Image (cartoon, rainbow, N blue to C red; front, side):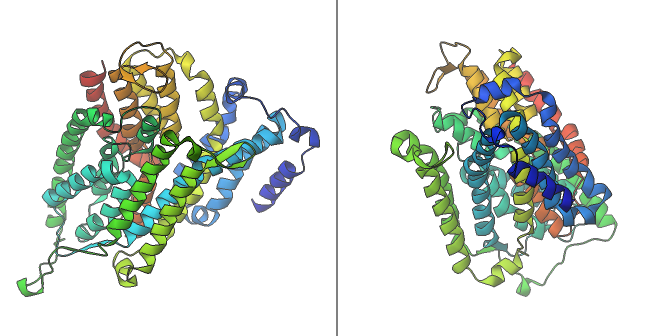
Length: 476
């Protein structure tokens, strides 16, 4: 594998000069129109590797994961450079790493660090009622501190409360459904697609229009979870698994250790908001560091500095014992960083094709936007997917609805695009970054999570019926 990657890298670096002299002005639309569908094979290979290798060669996968990511990335980049020119390939590589991946991973890293320094302690016994309350609290937090922030804040308390349970996979699966995805639909802070809508003229509080859809979904899913968890709970009790019951004098009241880190989490949320507000309010902040035509804006640089400073100060001001009580390790963020750089790179052709041909899909009805946005957001980054169909809807010539920077979009259509992008990220582990982080942290704590396809069985059986109800009530 290493020899193959070395050869591929050398081929890319020492390609003939005419390759690098290709026309750098070729537009994304022209690229997307030209690219064949088979250019998405590396992306499919990346997804299949994530799905299959942990099942058939788990130890090999854990050891060679970075090389597999590099292989699929180069398998796309090298033919792309040969056909369109090394300059264009390098430009798109810089765009996806500097323009998209950098801010993405810095935000995840910051929230992961700060949340790892907050520990909910006390006698909290995991049972169906307690779990429903914890899931509801996390779901409500997601719109205000982001799905990643809420996931990292709530995952360890829920694991700790249910550590005595034998059957607890359903808790983690519904955690991903609700806290890592659906709960983030009410504000632009909740999920990046909604932030993109805000930056394109949609009002900050417009997303509250999604509240009825969210409430319906949360009600159905929490009811379903309660029934499943109650059945599992009774089996645990019958098998002799029981929570530790300590004497009254030894019980510990619920309290937060490292509570001052909530301030650092709020600073990170403020940084995300500023990154969206500054460029539209003060255009100078949209300028910045430019490399080969790709600009890392001053607003993004400020966001990165604020997040990294918050993470650093969080570690400096928090006792190591708090992280130890959370069983804090770097494994989860390391896995996400490795896998998602490969996902971001290999999905370049899929996004280019979608951007160029999205308007040709003949979408006119809200339910069509709901399902196509959601289906693609299940496997692609939901932020560019949202923008593609946001732009598509804005180009259809509507004369009334929600006012954006360029045109109108009917309320039902924008609701459908927003719900599809946010909700259906829950359909797969890769649909939203917190999904993978929750899975990794759960497995670190001894919870055997479903495989990639095993998780999709849960989502297809539990989520798709709910989304069909959404369509029938809100989008037809």
